[in-house]
Length: 140
Ligand SMILES: [Zn+2]
Image (cartoon, rainbow, N blue to C red; front, side, top):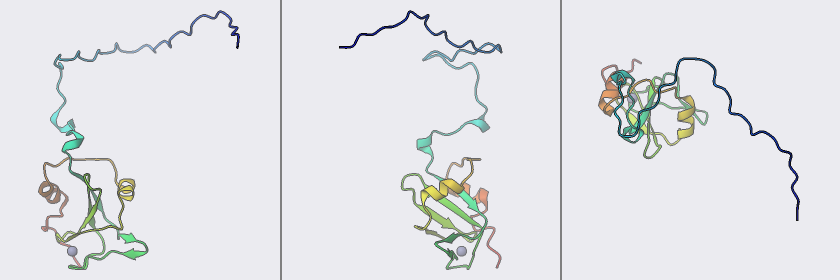
């Protein structure tokens, strides 16, 4: 059996917040927020985003081999697309040719991708906005 000995100490005091503007209380549940986020700053819920795209300008070298589009001969200027459901990576050239690329992992994709800069309502809108809809073909 142990016997505890303790000295009577005053309880620790919470830190004092620095002086600044008064905090705004979050809205109570069920209470509507008094302000609205501008539309261009809104982010869709994660479950509604089907995938992520990343433009990759340089040659895509996997296991020491440079990937080449088998249909148009492109060796650089890719759009990499990752499905959030399967984490499979699709490589697309500017001529609209694409293929599943098992040599590119989701971890690598995430490592080379920057922050999300735009959301598109569908894949066609994304491809058009990024210039991968076939209207800007690869020049040899
Ligand atoms: Zn191609």
